[in-house]
Length: 77
Image (cartoon, rainbow, N blue to C red):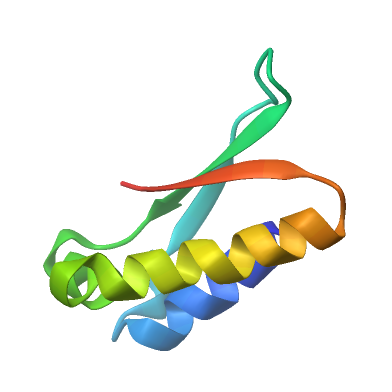
């Protein structure tokens, strides 16, 4: 899941070297939180107008997680 999120984000930004993903341990509800970190100047590319790109990223990653039987949450930091 981490690799999928990194690949998607690196395709959107101009400096793919500054993209990183950290993963928290599952909480009491079994939800794993993925934190996507990008350069501050490129935050708009990842979020998109009215959050459309961020929503699309979350949809794709959650669809994959559901297929794998996981519960996840994606935070863009």
